[in-house]
Length: 131
Image 1 (cartoon, rainbow, N blue to C red):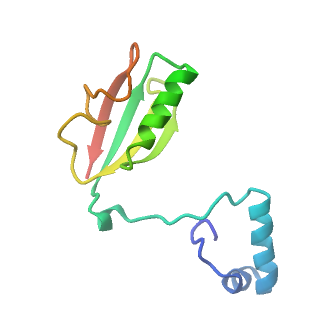
Image 2 (cartoon, rainbow, N blue to C red):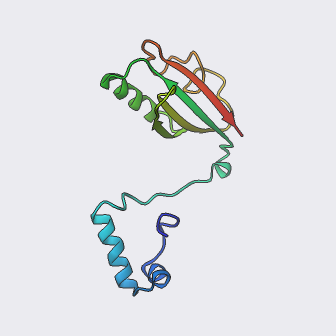
């Protein structure tokens, strides 16, 4: 329930699971203290923000060093358009999800030939967009 709606009150949780509001809220607090609940976030509707294009960016690299990963992590943190990143196995090393108004027209993380990140040997970029 909390994963679907992190704004539920103790009373709403208690009613849904058959507990008193105080008991339900204590359980939530205990889950937070144990690290089961990491944080509470707001999920934004990309359409409402005029970000109708979701780009899935495949990143391949021949460099798996800690230094490259540090540069890569720092680099993607500079792009608020990148809303998720995953380490994958198989042909693609990383998958990025980015929201944008349109496919960007110049150098950038979803365009081949971009100067970012420092590619290193055997690194390639490929993007797929959907609107």
